[in-house]
Amino acid sequence: YEGMSEVVELYKRFGRQLTDDTGVSEFVRSHRRLIKKGDFESLKAGGKSRPVRVYLLNDLFLVSSADDGNKLYKLLCLWLVQFEDINEDTFGFKNEDGELLLELQAKAPVIKDEWTEAIIMTLNNLNTGIIKGSDIEVSKVHVSDAVRWNKALIPPEIAQALIEEQAEKRNNTQFVKLREDREDKDKDKGE
Image (cartoon, rainbow, N blue to C red; front, side):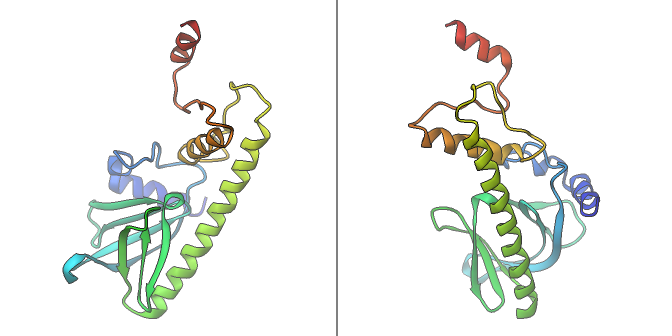
């Protein structure tokens, strides 16, 4: 359970900030672990910066106030962003359009290098998990639409993204939302 207790502590600290309008439906999940935490300067446009504490989880990246306060500045879903190695002491994350979402400066190049290594390893592990999940989904093509993702194996946000991607690959086939009520599904069949 190493790493899991820290996830629970983060949930206690930040509460609903972790799920409200972030795309994350449940923060405390059996697969989620804290990999690394540390302090950086968050760089803003115009040369301004502020001290922040960051948390690398196996599928999320959190940015909060540097003290032990409960202000969450940013939550990034790692499967939706690209890591950017900016210079000897700075790294960041971009969205799929290439827009820089976050730029962090380490106190020393060696700290930045340690974080770069940890982030790249985490992204590689996450991508491996997504590929395995995608392989599971591909194998379900011949199975009825009633078959759902095994929620214990993959976070619902990733599962939903993969279902949508696979549906598009199958000639724009419709997909079923993970949280769709059974009544809604039966109602659609009756019409």
